[in-house]
Length: 101
Image (cartoon, rainbow, N blue to C red; front, side, top):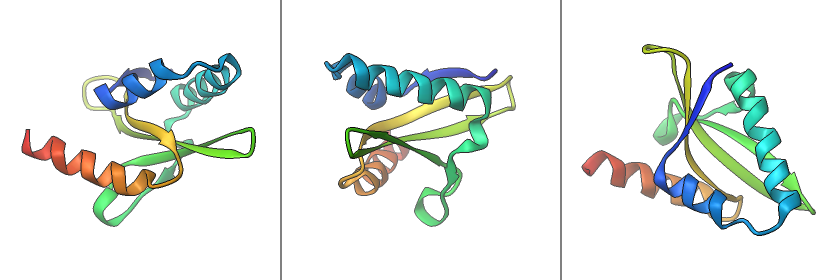
């Protein structure tokens, strides 16, 4: 199994979730990703190297964006989590911001 770590934005979003059933759905998604990180869809272009995993709950589509690292052990870093609406635009902004830090 891969170790899972969180960037600040993803951790903040997941901590804010109040609905316990939604939390369980995200937890099971993270367990699936830790077992097989290549289960998500590999993005190309601006988001090359990032995987996105769809999470569905109460007819709402959520996304988990993460990157897989295998150089120093097996690790998955969750970059961003949120609803599908404007998710990719926000992800691109977040990644661009990370580059300049």
